[in-house]
Length: 177
Image (cartoon, rainbow, N blue to C red):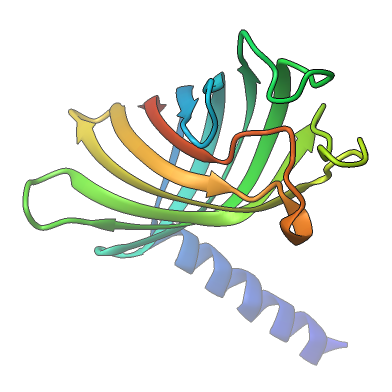
């Protein structure tokens, strides 16, 4: 019993020490994205939240999630919808770029859940797919983060085309806590 308590105490102390020696950042803000894979393109607007832990001066690891609503004036197929929603859940690797102070690069990859997205051929719902984004960002002062992001949410499972645009270019403006 005492050995278990001692082991748990050492683990808790190690976690507390590790958390206090690392920098934790959280940012929240709006995003706007434009899908350029199909014509006409869809515009997406929404927001995201990201938490990251700087495990070293030059490496941040974190999680990113949000909600984006995409819409267009014309559906991709005659019976298709003109809107769909995307909920990304992404693991993040963030690193400073030595070109300019406060400039950073970020890779985010994970899964995006989709709603109101259907396969063209049979009308079945598309559950979502693998997502990857690269962001180039800059932190102004202590609390403002602006990033340009480009990436792809793979909604077309097994090469069946889906009623959704996949390649996105976007802008994120976030407040850093």
